[in-house]
Length: 293
Image (cartoon, rainbow, N blue to C red):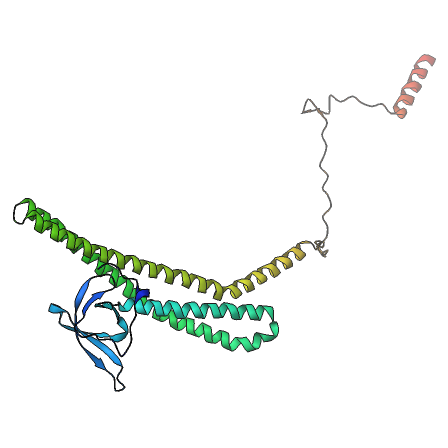
């Protein structure tokens, strides 16, 4: 029996005969046989007793078994728990989005919606704690399946070695290979479903986080926009000159000038004398006295 779609399950709580039916998990792996049930005071079935051979008698909660034909199908607990969390979280998420849409369209309902909003957020926080436990169970189950996969492949390989060494017949090897391959298919189906559930949980968590953090992000963006506007307004204001101080303003110091020729100073002795009018008059008087004598 291969992978069974749980959508095809059907079962009544009271009128289905369970005793004597063989039990398989929803991936086709044989588990045991139903040998009895335990009921509550009102007659409803609480658990199903399954003879699992060397693993002894296992009491399985009634919600984890359904009837399909001549078999009782066992549903793993991790699957029921993950489906329950995904369903509740998805519904709470949709209600939270609807509530935020109503408030955004009508501000007058904001105060009335705050109580419900906090209720939904509190429920999401509770579901997140349950979700962490489910994630741990899924990881643990994947590790178990990985070990089972190794063991099944080892059986095939060892049977092949025994066949080549003429310890077992070719027919026996083919039987081992067929049964082990069927088990590997069951393990592959369950591993794939666990990976799918993990992906759905991660995607839903990201959607919830985006919605719950959206108001905070919008508030931060508004604050940044306000600060940028203030900075732009400040940059347009002209800068005022500095206020004068009582310190005296120093006068410029004049540097002595030096006549230079070819960048060399001219000595005083080589500079020509400039004759003044008084000196010319004295020389004229001296010439006239010499002519008179």
